[in-house]
Length: 104
Image 1 (tube, rainbow, N blue to C red):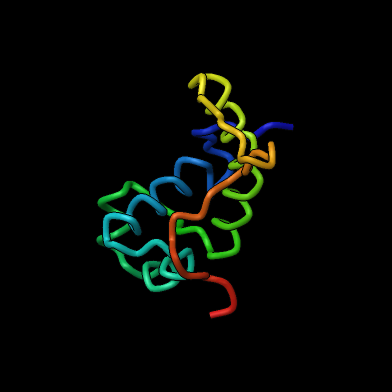
Image 2 (tube, rainbow, N blue to C red; image 1 turned 90 degrees about the vertical axis):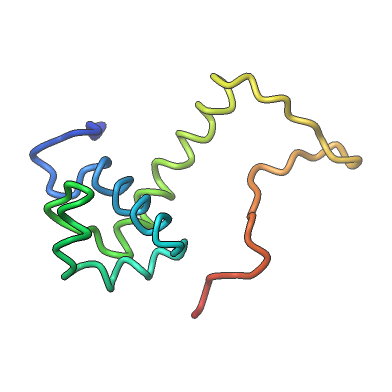
């Protein structure tokens, strides 16, 4: 069963996940944990048009689950020019942050 982007039967639908994370990025907060401080922020919810702020775990889960499918679709539809390394391996993902955000 596939979830719809604007499903009204799911209180934390995909669009709320995306809006919440976009809101964090606008506040220069890229770690999922920053959403915790926004849960009681009425202005944050109102500006983004969100009724329910997703939990840290929910954001991570959705980005992990849906992100894999979206990444593949983006590469296929965008006709990405993928260049292998000298070892003929292709790096499947990239981390653009020079530090780790795990175990903080």
